[in-house]
Length: 166
Image (tube, rainbow, N blue to C red):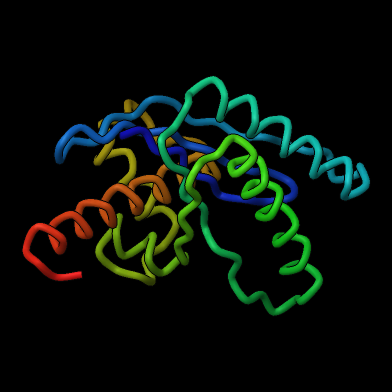
């Protein structure tokens, strides 16, 4: 199974692609879609949409995992982030892909084992789990963590189904 993880942002949107082969995770690619903060929001959303669409078409994932919007102290920032997230969802569903959503707490728990882990801990574990030669760029590493979270969640679902639980 190929999973594309997305860490949405209006300035930088990270993406990371992994393959899941049994219980093994394999890094395929990662990167960012960067926008200019001086551009109006609609143009920035178009850049995000176009960039993610290119990645989705190039890597043809089976599923997309995206980080949910957190509750920010600044409502305007949360709303703007929600636009970027919605753009990522639309780019995915326009290609008939399943979109799975995970909170930051779920992602950190799945990758580090602790829901309040620091960003550096997440980046280090992503590097270790995917046997990367170096730590990925911050937003790309976060996107890879989202993909890993989905891979682990799928494994747990399959175990529950096989054991007769749902």
